[in-house]
Amino acid sequence: MTFVSSLSQIPDEKQIRKELKKIIFGKRVKCPCCGRAMHVQQLKKNKLWRCRKCRNRFSLTSVTWLKGMKISIVDLYALIWCWQKKMNVQQACNLTELSIPTARRYYELFRDNLKLDFDVILEDKVQMDEAFVKKAFIMGMKDIKHKRIKLQVVMKKAPDKHDAMELIYQYVKPGSTLQTDGGSIYSGCENWWPLTHKRDIHKKFEFGLTSEIEGIWANLRTFIRRMYHHVTVEKLPKIVAEFEARFMHKEIFDNPLGFLKNSLSCVRLAL
Image 1 (tube, rainbow, N blue to C red):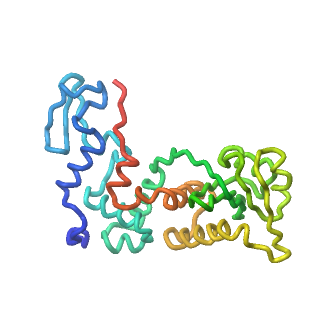
Image 2: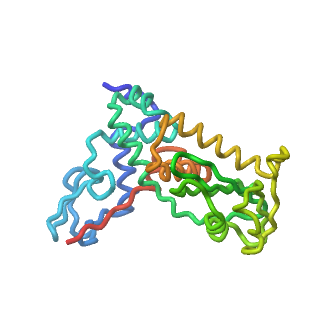
Image 3: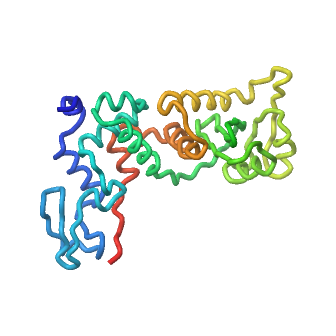
């Protein structure tokens, strides 16, 4: 018996399956092939169904990215909870009694299946800076008033003016005030986009205009070390996207059902 089964905050399998059914299918279970509900026959309650028309059998997990899942529904719920609470893989394994490779695999699945198609427009005072890692760099911006951020990983050694302006074009509202350091990549940006540009000169010990975006880099490094210890540059964009989602969309990380509502949907199968 795993320790998970004794955690009072973890629902039992019956309750979890009932909630998953609502998230995936809604009010009525529909066949993932023909899309009809009238021909669907329940074989096992909240677990397995069969379409009498196209003779297709399907379950809660077979029509989502959970297809092929080898762990129990309760262990899945517990792993999502651990991931949401920023538990490192070792601690999650101590709690669930799963193997480290299994926990790593599911942490990666959770990260890869976050739906992050949110519109982000930064306005008013926007701080902008870049952070460097091996073989890549991260361009970042923070809306000071509304506490929103936008981070983008670029797979090359050093940024140029084109990288900075592309981010500004997409995410900075015209008429805003852009605050940067004295880097040449930001020089003259007000000539290409309607904004007011203010600069800190770090050599003169000026840091007030970019202090909050500099703090984001410190938080990002702490987040990576705490949860993953280290990451490869190939996986960095997904890690950065997860950090950005945690910062701006806390409702996804309140409880496992919040994450499952964001990430799960029934995939229609070809006939």
